[in-house]
Length: 99
Image 1: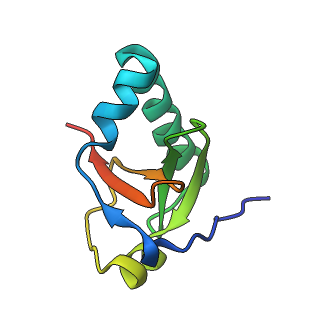
Image 2: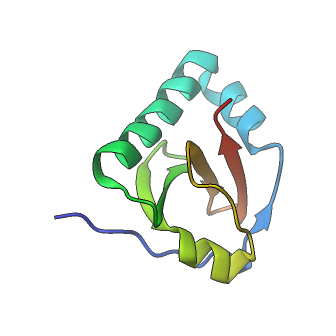
């Protein structure tokens, strides 16, 4: 059974340094692997109304509703190959677009 996680992103702020901190902590190969696994989860269990979320501190992954992101942050985006990198303790997030 698929379950989409619900988070309170209204208290979080965008930050463009989360990915570089993630890479510094894990190394580039492990960080890329974590991102690929998040995208794989989206391909296997997601849909056009979900986005993969990657938790910075634990490397945990899940799916989050794009409507939730939009309603709590005001962000709209093309959901194709996008990951929400999230740090709940720091209350920061970054959208990662695959290039």
